[in-house]
Image 1: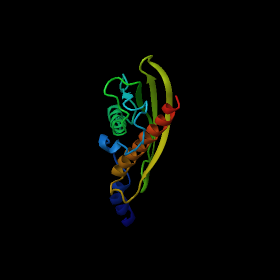
Image 2: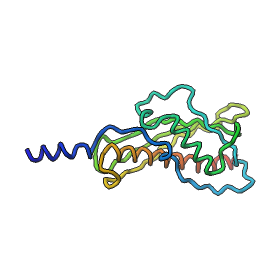
Image 3: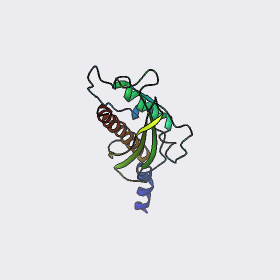
Image 4: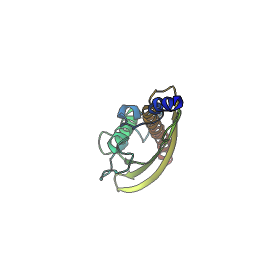
Length: 173
């Protein structure tokens, strides 16, 4: 009976309903050091999907939150265009691989980035990136909070990886 009571009391710390991520928590602190004359300076705009992403993950990381976080990260790195830009990026959350319960919550975020040349509207890059983040048992007491933190970390790392990849790719074009 004592073990049952302990299990009942510990259950909320191990699992629970995950709430939506805050956009600000999805913004990476990527720091690109682009040269002043780089063709990427203010060259990118962000577009959301034309139709809503009805995946099970959109309640936790919406298309709008993903696009807003990518926009902020591009702005921080001097890549965001105030107008249309040379490139338009459409980010789409493909999958969040989340644990059901546990002490350390590890989440893998898979995001597809579709990059179009704005002058021709042709796809110039179709890149899918998977990134993993672990929120440890000391990150938060509630399991649902740890999963949310892991979601945010995985998406944040994913955006950072995309920006680095994109900058390298675009400089080679």
